[in-house]
Image 1 (tube, rainbow, N blue to C red):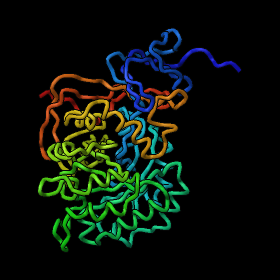
Image 2: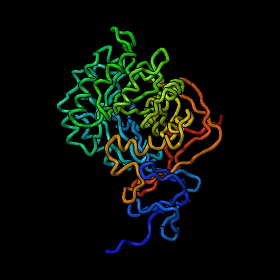
Image 3: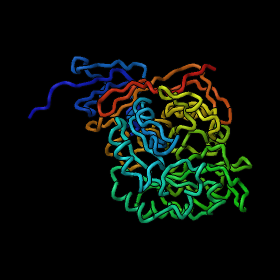
Length: 425
C-alpha cells in the first residue's frame, strides 16, 4: 500500500539542535501520524495540513526532565501534576525520582502514567513507602523499611516503566543508620541491572552534621565505592553539606576518579542549587551529564484549588518556604549563565537522559520514525536576573522559555501556572 501523501504538521524555519543526529542549524521538521517524518533544509508548506512558523525559535528533541516529583496526592505536597510539569511546561518526558515504591507502583501506573499526556518513567524508591514527606516521618526511611527482594522483583517485572532506583546519601540518614540503606539501594540497582540515582546533600535535616560523629564531607567517599558504571550522582551543586564542594570550599577529591570510571552527574536543580558552588565545581571541570528541574510542591508555588482558602493551602511552615520559581528551561538558562554553551546544555535534556534510562531507540532524538516528541523554545536575548535559594543573583544574557511542544504529534502550549516569569536585570 502506498505511503499517504502529505504531512500533518510542519515546523518551519526553526533552529534545530539534535545532538543525537548531529543537526545544528535551520531546518524544517515534518510530522505524520504522530511520528517524525522528515527533517530537511526546506519542506514545502503546501505538503502539510498545518504549518507552524517557528523562525527564531529553538527546535529540540522532546526535552526529558530527569528529576520530577509527580506522584500527585500520594506523596503529600511533593507530588505535582505530571502534565503541569511535563507537556504544559514544554517537556515531553518526565522521570519521577523516587515517588513510587514496589508497594505503590501499581497506583503510579494506573493514576499517573496511563492518564497523562506526558511520557513518564520512574526511578523506583528503595524504600517501601516511596517518596513520602521524609522530613516529617524519618523513621519510615530506616533499613527496616527496605525490602531488597521485593523491590528487585518489582523493578524487573515493570521494566517498561521502571528505569532506575532512587537512593539518598544524606547526613540525616547517615547519622541515624549509617551507610546501611545506601548499601541496600546499591544492591537493588545492581541485581535489577538498572542505574542508581543518588541524592547527595542534606535532606531530612536532623540529625545535623556532626551528630553521632558523622561528617557530611565523608559521605561521598564512602558511597562512591558502592556504585557501578552508569549510576548517577545527583545535586552536585547543592548548597547543603554533603555535595561536591566540601565545607572548606573545595571540590571533593573523589569526584574526578568517579567520573573517570563511568559515573554520571545530574544537576537536580531545585531548592538545593547554588550558583556559588556550581561556579567552583564547573571551574574544576565538573560538567553535568543531565539536568533535572527537581520541582515539587515545597519549592514551586501552585495556586490554591478553587474554593480553597490560600492560607490553608500555602503552609507557612513548610521547609522550603519562599523559594524562587524555576523550570527545566530556567535550569538550562542557569547552566548557560554559568558559562556553558547552548550546545553543551541541549544534550543534558535530550540524548544524555535518553542514554541514562536506556531508551535511545525512542526518545531524545529527532530521528525519522521516532515518536514526534519535540520541544520548541523561545531564545530570549537581553539581561535577565536569575537567583538561587541562597539568594545569589546572576545575570543571564540568554533566557530560554518554552513556547510549546509536540508529544507524539499532539501540540501542547507551554501554559503551566508554575512557569517562572522573566525578570529584567
